[in-house]
Every structure is written in structure tokens, then in C-alpha cells.
Amino acid sequence: MSQRMQQGQPMIVMSEDSQRVKDKDAQDYNISAARAVAEAVRSTLGPKGMDKMLVDSMGSVTITNDGVTILQEMDIDNPTAEMIIEVAETQEDEAGDGTTTAVAIAGELLKNAEDLLEQDIHPTAIIKGFHMASEQAREEIDDIASDIDTDDEELIRKTAETSMTGKGTEVNKEHLAQLIVDAVGQVTVEDADGNNVVDLEYLNIETQTGRAVGESDLLVGGIVDKDPVHDNMPTEAEDADILLLNEAIEVEETDVDTEVSVTDPDQLQKFLDREEKQLRDKVDTIADLDADVVFCQKGIDDLAQHYLAKEGILAVRRAKKSDLEFLSEVVGASIVSDLESATEDDLGFGDVTRDDEDELFYVEGDDAHGVTLLLRGSTEHVVDELERGVNDALDVVAQTVSDGRVLAGGGAIEVELASRLRDYADSVSGREQLAVEAFADSLELVPRVLAENAGLDSIDTLVDLRAAHDDGEVQAGLNVFSGDVENTFDAGVVEPAHAKEQAVTSASEAANLVLKIDDIISAGDLSTDKGEEQEGGAPGGMGGMGGGMGGMM
Image (cartoon, rainbow, N blue to C red; front, side, top):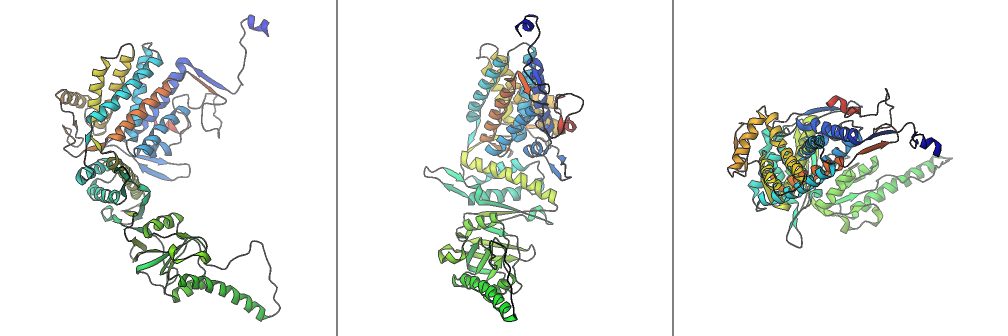
């Protein structure tokens, strides 16, 4: 072995199937993959952003311009690309909105970092500069942000409208924004320190097709999309005692297979009578509890339905577990798993009404903490996109109410941050200064893309925005509808400061994570999907994206 090494022959320590990319090639590979993800969603940014149609392997179609939905639905099997997708997922979890912005900034950071690498600037200097710029940007965002009164309903409604703009809700965004603000207000409580806490888990969203979006409504309570189990049952009950049951009202079955042999009809009749008595006893137990309404998660036997109808009890079977859990908060009931041990204390109290047109039960409780947002739309695709937009707006409003800081939208904050970071760069020594300036340039991607997506000249727009900010107009942003530079805060384009802070932080950390990699070693092909072998011998995704991303480029 030593003789072979002396002759300059390499020692092979990796398997034949392994793939390795290192140094400059590894950096180019990672940056290309990350930028491809950012390019895939850039055209969806802003009120004039376009939608993507995503068709999965089963033929299901999703039409959306929601960044995180697009990236999650795309068939990506590139490890670096999946790291960038995590940026969108983190942004969605932490802020609820701004996913496209975060991913687009991450891609632009890596593009500008690539230019610095070409100038022989070491990745560690770029990483340090990006980190310094990110920390400074967070401080500047806090300085620029306006503190609001959480009781200022009009301003909070504007944040909801801004979030929903461009997501298929323009015509009815004022109506929906008001519903969202009212819904968040219903589930907001104060903690021991006097801070507002928004419990979105007590806000339920139901969807319905065949109606106009403007007919969407907010109910202080819950909705059950079921029918009564018997035609002779009442369909409404005021001031009702409500039982939530997680046990079947059916004949109990044995744990093992059994056979019953009968020798005469009387034995068979006794057997049937015993089954009937079991059902009668279950219904009597419910009646003895003085329950007026029963929502059962499991089945209800036909005979039991008859007995319940005779007792004047409204019963619903096969209710969803999530509905029961939500109703327990609405009416203050406990979910009963053993009917024999149930007491009157387990019952809830509220009003149950029937909407025969929509075939829904509305359940309202006194001082209910839970509310239901009923979203209506003409088709499934419309309702699905509406739900995504409303979910984002709910998170945005919740963040605004909790955090109490807002910013001007329309690219105003990005241009102001870029200007301040360039001033900050003058105080930074070494090559990190170039990285800070590159970070500032990357932030200006947002107003440029907003202009591009609106059919405007991005260069002229950026020049006008810079000029306005140089004149001290901190809230000067782009009106994508008129193409003018104006005070977007006064125009009602308002964004939560927390979402912007999260976007900047997530983008910079993801870019730094990618830049720190100088060697990629894979046991097989460079793909996260090992289900199919790549043909042609080239590592999967080496062309930039690979897998299902090829069609997006």
C-alpha cells in the first residue's frame, strides 16, 4: 500500500456509486439550485403577481400564487433546493405571510454572493458580512416601524387587506378583511402581563362552494355539516343541553367471532329483544341526562334513531373529531367516551339552528371563545385559494395585534433598509463591507419585482424610489396600480414588522448555510428522491434543479 502511495496513485475510500462535487463546482451547484427555487416564485410577488397551476402525479390541480404552497406542491428532489423551501415553511409558520419575499431575497443574496466569489472574496467574509447586515436590518426595521393601538380596527383591517391583495379576493377584500378582524377580536385574550394573545386554534374555517365570495360569513360558534339522523327529529333547539359523544349508539359487538345456535323462534326473539333493550337503555341514559342535542362521532343504529326521535332529541352521527373538539370549546361540554359514566356536568349549553338551504347546523354558545369563518366561493379552486389567502391574513392580523408594529408596504421598507445599510457599510472594515452592500442591493429586488410583475419599468421605478427616500420620504413605496411613487402607508398598504424581520433573517441564514458548503458527498445520486434511477450517469439535479423542477426553469 505504501509503495502505491509513493507512486502517486490515489487511495479510493468512496464507493463506486457515490457522487462528489467540491470547491467552486459545489458552490456553483448550490447557488444555481437555490436561485432556481427563487425564480420559480418571483412572478407571484405582489398584487399583480401571476398564479401557478400545479398538477401532481395523481392529476390533482392546484392554482395558487401562495409561495409556500407552490414550493410544497412542486416535485423537487434537490437537497439544496429543499433547504430554500424550508425558508418558506419557516416564514409561513412564524409570520404567516411573506414567504415569496423571503425566498426571493434568499435567491438574490446568493446571486450577489456569486459575484463576490468571482472576485476571490472568501465565503467566510461574505457570510460574516451578510450576518452583520441582517442584524443591522432588524434594528433598522424596529426603528422604522410604527407602533399602533391594537384597538385601531381600521389600521388592522388594512393589514388584512394588504395581505389578501393579489390572492383572488380583490373584489370582496373589504368584506373579508372585516370578517377577519372581527374573528381575531373574538379569540384575543389578555395574558397576566396585559399583553394580547391571539388563540387562532379557536378559530375554525369552513368552506362551501356554489355561492359568491361576498356571502362569506362569521359565526360566533361552530358549524356541523351533517343532517339529522331521523326525519321526525327536531332540527333546532334553543337553550339546549348538548351532549358530545365519542361512543357508538349501537349494539355492542364482542371482541371475538361468535356463533349463536337457536332451536326455536322464541330463542331468536329473546336474542333480538336483548339487542333492542341495549339500544333502549343507551337512549334512556341520554334522555335521563336531559340532553336535547347529541353530536355523535360514531354510528347510531336505525332503531336507536327511532327512539331518539320519539324522545324529541336531535341527533347527528359521524361528526368529525375536529368538529367535536371545537364544539367542546363553543358550548363548554366534555367529550364523553363512556355513556354509562356521563353526568349532567359533561353537557354543554347553547343554541342549535338549521340552515336548510346550505344543509348546515349552526351551534352557538353563551360567551363562546370559538368562532367559525364560513368562506364561500363559486368553485373548489376558488374556495381553496380563498382559504389560503384568508389563512395568511389571519396570521398577519394576529401578529399585528400581538406585536403592535407595522410598516409601509409596496417596497418602501426594502428601499429604506437598502439606503440605511449602504450608510452602515461605510463603517464596516474589510471585505465584509462589500457583502453588506450586496445585502442592500438584494433587498431592492422586492420593489424591482413588484414593478416587473405590474408591467412597469423596474429600473425607472427603483430610481424614483431611491430619490424619494433620499429626500427623507421613509414611507415612499410603489403603487402598482398607477405606477406612481407615493406614501403607501397613508394609501393603506400596511405590513406587520414581524413578518419583514422574519423574512430578512430567514433569507440571510439560508444564504449563509448554502455559502458555507464547499463539498457535497452523496452515497448515490445527488437527489433526495431515491425512488427512480437517473439515466445518463449524471447526478440528479446537477443541471441546476433536476427532478420536477426542470419544467419550472
